[in-house]
Length: 274
Image (cartoon, rainbow, N blue to C red):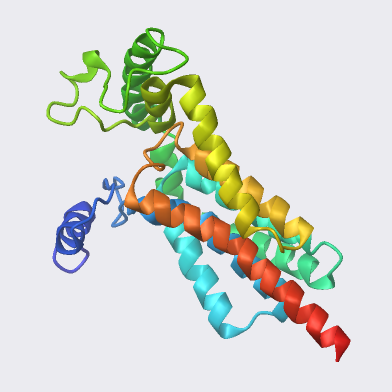
């Protein structure tokens, strides 16, 4: 972008077309930075937790440290308030899980030092200012308000059983021509379609999957995985992150965290018995 004078968002769009995927993007005014938000960026908070946990347990080795820096860069460039928030929570949870380790204090100090350096960079400041500017928030929030009113108007017609999976909010036709089933508020839209009974059954099914995957996990990691599962569901209140290919990958990634924890438990018990 700097060498060719091409807007960063144009480069991101070209990458999206090459990989045949959707990438949310816009240029950050006054910088060569741009929003790069893949649908799978939501799972970054799981990677943040895992890598910080590894760094505390095994020390600041080159590979996990480099991977964490890449994750941190991806989080910043996502320019998403929700992704920023859940990654911060994931970092705090990783430190809390290892609070008895002296290395956790070192991680906290290192993170604060790194954060202080990063926020001094002009481009990073512009990124945060652009995301929290009133114009950017008004644009994204206004679309959600329009969808919410239309969705709940349809939901009121069939609260218990829903309007059916083939239904859609009628008043959204003029706002999303040809895309009647694409919603920013995916959780609310699904609630409109299947009703409270259908939503309850869906949540029970997801929880049943969680119980299967986390059956042999260490308790504290089961709790962490459950918190992350709640993050995934809550994200669909604002973003289409449930019923997509990336949504399925995110669910599997979260459930796999419990499997990793259970393997550590088995390995630990085996070592003790030798």
